[in-house]
Amino acid sequence: MLVKKERSALRIDALDRKAITLGLTPGMTLADARARAPHLAVAQADPDADERLMLRLAAFCEQFTPLVALDPPCGLMLDATGCAHLFGGEAAMRTCILQAMVRLSFTGRAAVAGTPEAARALARFGQEGVTPPGEDEIFTRPLSIAALEAPKETSVALTRAGLTTLGDLADRSSAALTARFGDETMRRLTRILGREDARITPLRPLPECMVERRFAEPFLDLSAIENVLRPLIAEAMGILERRGEGGRAFEARFFRTDGAVAVLNFETGAPSRNVEALLRLFRLKAESLADPLDPGFGFDVIRFCVLNAETLAQSQIGFERQSAQEGDVADLVDRLAARFGRERVLRFAAHETHDPVRAASYVYASPSKPNAWEKPEPGEPPLRPLFLFDPPQPIDTMAETPDGPPMHFKWRRVRHMIARAEGPERIAPEWWRNAAGRDRRTRDYYRLEDREGHRFWVFREGLYESETAAPRWFLHGLFA
Image (cartoon, rainbow, N blue to C red):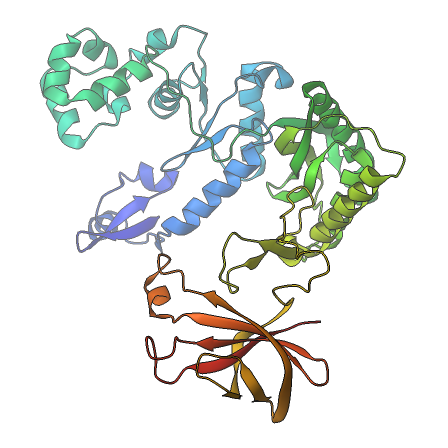
């Protein structure tokens, strides 16, 4: 028996069959329960652990249909549309699910109906089984008012009015019942009776493409797993080819007989239908797992999904093999991302801003999304250095005039005598970004070259007299 604290008292949250035969019910105080049965085994309820368990069961049930939703407090809702024929019909599918739950040491009740609310009402308050199409109302009318799962005061009011079944309620005027008990009660009634349908919201969106293989006996041979995946990937790529699409995000799911589900996700930088390239990415991803793929007592189902697809037009490789080279780079990026993770395969991306601090950032090194960098004029040196200090390094300078370039500066105990200077490039702070930007001062940037040929990018922070009486100098970058 599980208990939880409610209204300053420990109350029963859940109990087993033996406790129910003793007359105990959820909501009863622990003191009253022990007065009836002093030797109760009691444990503290853990709602978070219950939720994690239901999520694991939901992942396990995705082998029957990809559309699975939680049905609190302790139920699952499966949309069997288009999936029942894989198991020999809805009745056989229901039996298969219940048998799988028994193997996992769970007992449950299951019903198949035209609407989610009708299936829930029949499973919890009525007769289990499969409701023939269009006959939800016939099977749900005899159910008690409790099947509405309305607030306690609503159930009491309905019972006192002599309405003990859903059929009694359905025979009354809907306008009068709505005025008395509200829209939600009547909406739930119409859905239980099958007059109105509302689809479930699955935990995961439906993939673009999904193929799977089921095994009569649990699959245990990891060395042959690529032999199973290869035809699955080829079948999925054939579906995408008929659509004129290529996959960008992929997922391989392995459903174990003990209820555990192993998931491997990998992506490509550009839309792809290359079976062998995808197999290589899967192999690299599997090898990089901290917890290696373990079949346990075997896999019942192996599924391959295309989570994201984009248009992929056929392209012809030119005589100079430019397209092939681009493809080689994309393949390299995909393999590195599969082995080390997307967050470790990065490149610089340009941004539309004059602020050198914000001019570039790290992004995933996808060759399909190039960023155009501003190119210098032909024969001219670059305006910005490739190497920047973060934060800029303070330097000691000497200038002929307060608003002119330095004649020499000292950095890291070395004095540099300036031979040439270009500038200034005046950059004002981006005041619209945040309050901190308004506090920053204007910067005048100079490109300097010392007598040894070293080139520096320095700036003076603050306009003389208008922003500060003593501007400071910083070294921000080094030119190659």
